[in-house]
Image 1 (cartoon, one colour):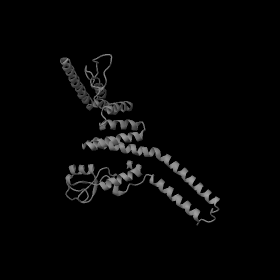
Image 2 (cartoon, rainbow, N blue to C red):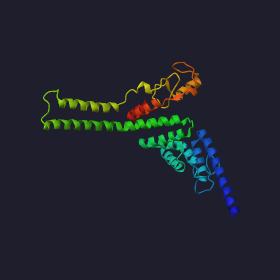
Image 3 (cartoon, rainbow, N blue to C red):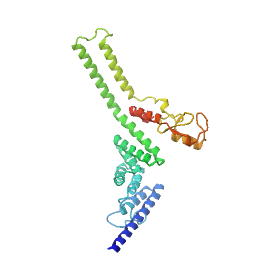
Image 4 (cartoon, rainbow, N blue to C red):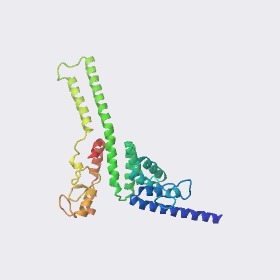
Length: 299
């Protein structure tokens, strides 16, 4: 029995190694943009033959067929479908990957992209936020963070845009209902105006101001300057402050320090990366502003 167990373990290890070889070959195909070949390397093998003939991957079983419980294989195949814009398969593979490992930030990113294509903006936002939170909690620096932020901003803007017209219509209907109720109240109480300078007129004016403010708050405009980077003029995402007291977008400032020189772009004072401090006050102000003005995600 021990010999049988050892044999089983040996077979299992061999299968795992073979699966990793298929994944490596799939990765190589992916980098060369041979997406069909990469999908074949990642995908499930045909049930009619234990060793199917894969057109661009020689005569090997796929990684998923060998080890279907490895989340990264499903995610890698999902990335191939993502490149092909095959959104139904992107959603399917990313869900399979996340069912096996919910900590895959790329899996949440892929699922969010698939949901966004279906115009399920609220669900897409949840997935993109999960992806960013996972990246943040891991303290890793990944170039995908910018891509995730961009699609998150797009999803939030589209979500605002989708419901904006509906909100305006509802506010207009509510305003008319309030004005009619106010007029009826004064009519029944015998206080309907004969002149413009009376209680009814003042109440109508106040009502108009309230609804006008609500509409203006939901209308695209200019983002306040103090919430925007002085280099890009875009709203902050990760603001940092220099010893000179100037706040910049972290990524943009770091690029300046690497490519241009170790000095503050505005004050020209000497500056190194280690001197940068997160501007938490501005970051909180940006978050509060975006919460009330979702249209600003497009700026």
